[in-house]
Image (spheres, rainbow, N blue to C red):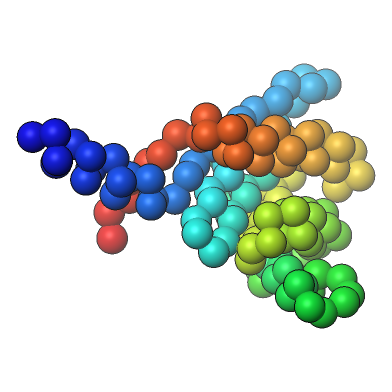
Length: 139
């Protein structure tokens, strides 16, 4: 029985890590969902409730190459600057492909950027400390 427990623990350790955080500022709820897989990170940033927004992808620069992170917007036309900026930030910090969604209802990008950056740092720190919850998903 002990062998099966160890095997199950090892299998769960290979799964994606999921961290959820929220921040309440100026009568507004800011939310972050962070999913980290072996080769990539997904970050959903939202105002008020979890929703998909403008989606950007960034690919980190290879170690032997010089230059900035490459990024592109995949979906949407609002909050483009924030989505690309956060995707580039996560890709550079983690050295992995990063996909970031930014959804805002009331606030502008500039008003929300500091709160979202704080949430990103918070979820990445939690994940690296191993506090992220591991969720099994069915294929």
